[in-house]
Length: 143
Image (tube, rainbow, N blue to C red; front, side, top):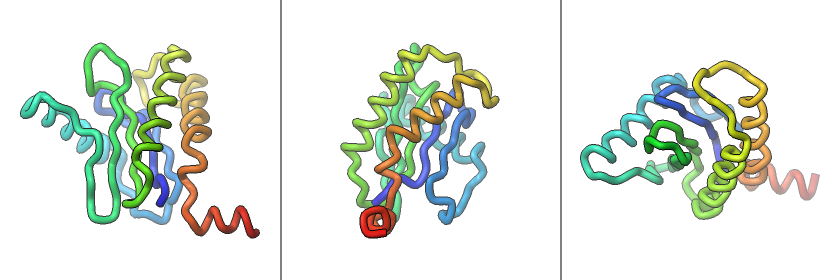
């Protein structure tokens, strides 16, 4: 029950990706960003709606639009193990959104900038305890 990966996608480009459990199979970030962007576009065009959580058999993918003029152009995503508390992840993503808005960074290129490093630290700080699996938490407590 943990967050496996988190990231930021802007205009279909994977601007930021944080992998917390590298043992899970890695997929090309462009393919992943394209799929998530396509799902958001499909939901908007076909149903005038937006996807929030996509459920798979072992994982869930949570998508969170950031406040922009055009919905779906900038969003955070998290890949979660199946029984991770989605409500808490959603609350944390909202906190990240609010803090990012206060930073007022321009994110238009997947280049490591000072602003992007700040956002990376923000995401890590906000999601840190949710990235620990039960075995990791037990090790932290009992050594």
